[in-house]
Image (cartoon, rainbow, N blue to C red; front, side, top):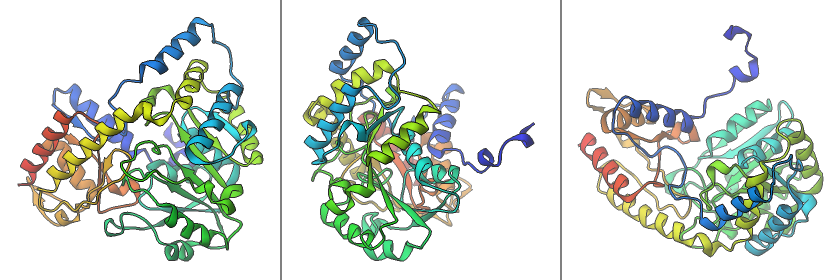
Amino acid sequence: MSKALSNRINSLPVSQTLAMAAKARELKKQGKDIISLSLGEPDFNTPDFIKDAAIEAINQNYNSYTPVDGYLELKEAICTKFKRDNNLVYKPNQIVVSTGAKQSIANIAQVLLNPGDEVLLPAPYWVSYSAIATLCEAKFIEIPSSIDADFKITPEQLEAAITPKTKMVFFNSPNNPSGSIYSEKEYKALAKVLGNHPQIFILSDEIYEHINYGDKPFSFAAIESMYDRTITVNGLAKAFAMTGWRIGYIGAPDWIAKACTKMQGQITSGANCIAQRAAITAVSATPDKVQYMVDEFKSRRDIVLNLLGKIDGFKLNIPEGAFYVFPDISAFFGKTIRNKEIKNANDFSMLLLEEANVATVTGEAFGAPKCIRMSYAASELQLREAVKRIKEVLS
């Protein structure tokens, strides 16, 4: 019966991050002591003040269908947050709340892309960007970068990638998987290029904005000339340790927001009522409420960089945000380790899983075939043990 499946689903790749996590869980069931550094999920509990808001909502009998684009009170709180944290002025009719930032991104792509349109993806990029473009029958174009460039593209690269078919470009800062952050100066240089191509829309994915270890990330829509062409995506999963609550949102030109609401109304309707009520409390909280998590992530980052830096063959940059390291491991290509030939990053990632019992994700899934992604959203004890195992296998 698989022959009856649509071309749409057959053309869709499996998410490599979810696939590796599933494989790790299966090996755990078999009794193997797997340390999973594959999923981007904080290992903290949701803060109590947010949980208390959810409990209060339950006791107040919030149990009915929600407005498709979100409760007005939540959209107003998001507008306040955008002004407070990003110097962005949005009105409630420009906000759409969705079941996670991934749905927000899918909505945007569905309402803006036509078959044959081109989407520019500065690489490395989050795995679902390319799949979402494919679902829209659009073509994704990778703009490569390297660890030597801190995984950032240049204005010259952006200009060279643009064609008459280019409809969108996806920016993600702080970046998953590299942890790199574009500065205001760097974004303005890219915006200068886009200023010459008014047909291109910009999706700015800022889901990791609060997880940064230096300068505060800059919002692309804060560039005045780009405001009317930019859709800002954010959510609660990462900074507030609310991955399972599934709340994401956008700030966009009102006509795009209206189209996303129309699309969502035919797919899922409004997001979970209890999670939305809790989200009002979360987005109303100032970033210092979750600073304890950020401080811990920075400590873990430094530990992992220090330990990996002692392994010959690992080439590292210093990620300034998110909770990943993205080492270039191409020095191992062509070598045979534990009787396994390492031809590419996928082979290297499988070697670590099978021989070191450490789950990572191949960089091929992110458009960076020389790298692997390792999440440090795990305990210090697990991180130290994971790198110890990796070092033993590679030595």
